Image 1: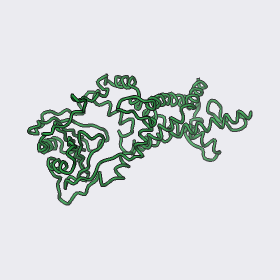
Image 2: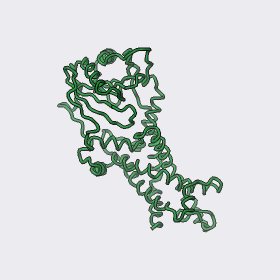
Image 3: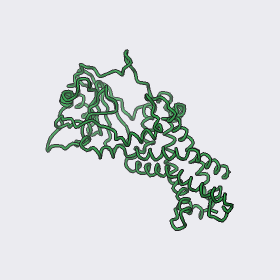
Image 4: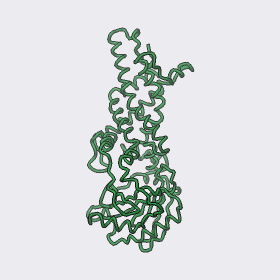
Length: 385
């Protein structure tokens, strides 16, 4: 049985090892994207709070933002962080994936949030091998290859665990450490075995959750397994008569935001963020949480009075599974500690195929010379000769 899994491990790794390295290393580069991006542009994400100053009312911020942007931009949301030294973010219904940073104490615009080109490239590599779909949800050859590679990676990791299982306590001790004094081949062998074991659990979690973005059949099965059913699947955007996404009402009275925001603060004395919309608002109630847990509050568009509260804790699995899968795929569920572990595991996952190629090359080269039994190569069970 061990020989069968060893062959399976080898011949699945040889054709797809380089793709696994690309997917893992590009994923590792994305783990701290948010933190690095914010550190690179503190002028966009941070503000200085004047002594004893309070932020301007949301309606005043809305008025000043609209006065400083083109008339074609339609303000639709305002993200208000709980941290007084964080900038507020204005969203527009005809601008995708970008928000406008605003100083809440002056109403001055700081600039647009933008993704760093390096991370844009890494994301294209990680998700589509640079073959990005023309529209969201569409398939491409690159997207399919990433899905197949991730699926095969799961079998490689499982077969690697089967091969790794030691037969006695002494062997277990050797499998869990890396030798630095017995030559390069032994070093890379120990690294492949020991580091592979330490990273396997994290890599399996990443792979099993990541497949939900590659294959619809897998996503359906995974969501159903956790009680989400088909309701957990992403919904298609609704469109108006002309095929465009519905926009915010031009005659919306942004003064309503003041009362709606005050009502939200009364219900949530502490919060991570409040996102005001043109008919509802979202509150992230736990300032210390790293998960995307938000309560949705509906308000009267004329008075700003809260009319309904849909709490995240009461939401069915169909509405929360996507955020859970994302959190466990990226490592964001536990904050910096889990992100660091995921980063290290992803880097190891990218190195494992390369060290595997090295070991395979050394073994086949020794076999060609006819002296593999005396050269310090590796046999099919992964043990040194």
